[in-house]
Image (cartoon, rainbow, N blue to C red):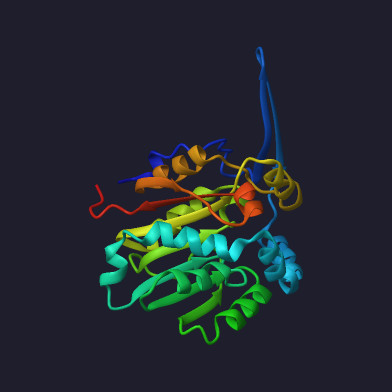
Length: 254
């Protein structure tokens, strides 16, 4: 399957246009569009370095840890491949302070080996401290989700929370996640949703905001099958902020 010729990501810009859509309206023959330059990788890293000391407190106030654990239990309860493997291999892209990986440790009652990447060195330091003593076999490193430092077909599960929306071209990151996941493996994403709280995040962080349908479209266009949105429970603020979807890499690629 040649994904480069079949993708139709929503509101796509020319690939040399490093902007994110904010507003689009049609009035008769007029099309009004407002786009904003995405943060450069160095700018994004600097912002998250600055936010790192208080990031876990912010997530706690939003109810994110409980929401993540409930989300992962729902998403993975009927995934026997994760339970059959002697030790599932998991990749957390944009691991941040480790909230999603820590939730997976509570939600998945079998051992797994964790790789984590993040653009922010200070976030990685917080994640190492959080995961220490959890029993997770983990290896964390600085890296960019758009150019993952791993061989193809390595992981049973690749997951990312609130990373793709920072990218002018999220399809690049989804292709990379698709590449490193094994055939039959899973990709789980959380993104900022279209909502008043999502609008605040977009204003502050220059992100995409998406609906569940748009998120499903992104995953299908990246080559995944059995794509579906997942219910978010717990953490009322987080439910207002986020949308979550999961999909599977086909066992056989055409």
